[in-house]
Length: 628
Image: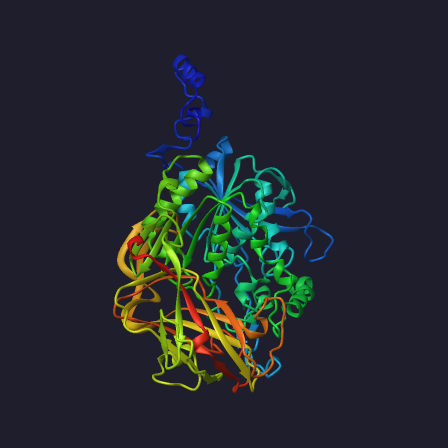
């Protein structure tokens, strides 16, 4: 909480004014301090008069482009003009490799031969979620309330030096150095090379961002850097292996089939002389990422922030879409579980959107909670946010609930047993005969789910109509006993399906016709936004979640172990975590396939999988009805 002196004219200044009839310039009435009313900072500073500066911060100890000089990041800063008159403010920081746009890069081929080598085709990289300096809402909303905004152009992009490496330690070092500079521990320079200090900064920093920009807060928090008080990772990665791989198998982020670490690094390599400076380093990533076995390796371990979660000192406000198939839900969940084990102060929002910014979904409530969060952690104001429920979960379009924690309290693992003839239920069917399906490479998972009756390319098991709603919250798993022969596809893919017509979110945003003016406007930026809601459609089913396994990695992700054709093995793997209600009258289904057209590599067709249903089971994290 700011001292009373910071909120009012000093007593000595008042005496001078009373005796002389003048007001000292340093205490002029039009130079406000931080104003707090109703336990919240108030918008008393001018966005239009804000000071903008660019500082080039030296990343000591990091020379990723091997030019003999420490790498540098470019930091664009916007701060209240009163900071030039002695006001000190905390910083909201967003680091990104996207501020300078991206390059046109071809993705890897996903149609492969029996040895996993790519067949001769190319795919283009789709556009990533972009970011533009000061084009968001932080400056309009937070700067007037006594915050500075810092946008860090990370290594290898735009005006920075160094090289992008898709999540390696050098990328983490960039925004960490910016935090060090804000605390007087790193060197910064203006465009002419003159030293610049941040004497206007309190040293307290909150990092926020979506996608890659949300991943960097996770990475920097895992260094334990002093001064980073909170992070808000939105649709963020916690382990890059789980972004481009799954349980030993090569896997694509949704919508970016064929992308990998090297493709993304090439995409964001927008610095001057990028190919000359960084080409060899990115080539080494291409070699090291290994698209043949998909095994976990030291290259991936260096990009796993879970390794250092014990160093996290910052509070964490996690936000993720339950229908985000780009940065899949395992990314938030494994980070959340690890933070919970260490009692890190935390909060979570789970929504029904895809790879989205919560500002676009529930704007007013998002601003209210984010404001309270930053006020508490960066200004030390008791905003009440830490006494509110820890978890906000959208269980259906526009249907939000608030809960004490996530997964929801009262959740317990419930096994459902498979039986031949498509049965799925609470009772085991140990004598069920074995069933076989043959892999193919042209039909999508959706087409295989929609197929009626027996199908040669998948096995499907369903419950009867549910007598009551069933809510799951957490991470489902599946265990299958099976043999594999006559082909090369190493994948087992499991689809958890909700069969039953319902109105469901369809991944779009629809304008409501209303406008919210949330902050101060400037020319070209009104400080207003069109309010939107999730678009919906009535669909006969939904693939609630998926899980993938490379059967050669049935024991561990870092070791490929060949199978003996026709021999039965026990395979157990996880689905992507979720929170979902299977409604009364719907049927709950498990569909087992091999190649998942939009995600896995596509081997030559023909691999035969024979499953023993009576020795296989689905395990669901079911919420006790009274608890939700």
